[in-house]
Image (cartoon, rainbow, N blue to C red):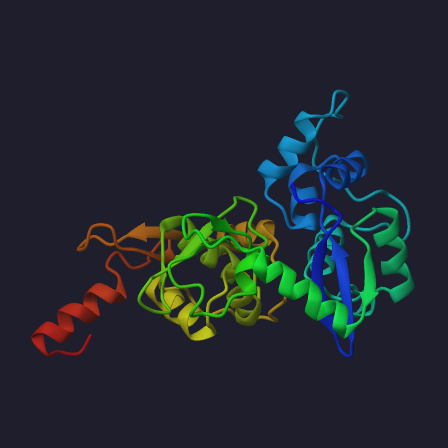
Length: 292
């Protein structure tokens, strides 16, 4: 885990903040209160493996369980905690988070302190410039080194060519690699499935693109490639995997391999859904000059 002596820089309006990183102590402290590995990982924007590694060093680690909302008035639900943690670690202010949760800013701040989520300190623009320059200078030049999301976000699209970085808010340490000769990335099955889950969880395209460090047009293209269905409902800045799982089960979606093209997968309904992908039909239509 990274040391808490440094942190991530966030800009909010005219203010600049330095937020401490989550450490093994942060993980153990939060887990002691919640005892839910997935919940802790999501709230701190770390992988479940990071949580498990931190807990493995704890001699008297409590047994893991699924967090249940306490039976008392005003108790925080699991989803509220997920949103609080994920948006706080993304740089949102207590006021912004309160609007998402329909709670008061004071309530959000109090809960943040109670859970010991990483604190922030306000810094000057001069300090911001110095810290960012130091962070950029510390980015490994070796293209074989996998960058953190923060490190990759400090690079321009040109500088990210040929580099590999971790996707933000990914519980499985998913990575993306940019092509050396252009702005496109090398897509793989795990990343394709992650995009689909974020789509079905109603995360906004802007936030998905930001978490993957790709353009929204690239996201739209890949979503079309996966044949993701339109979403009817309000888009949110956060990503809750369980929401995607529920939506997929409720609408009976499945990721199916095209009958006519091996290795070509797409999303459709389990019953009565397509067996041949639109991509294949369009390619055949283009060859024969007919309508798809």
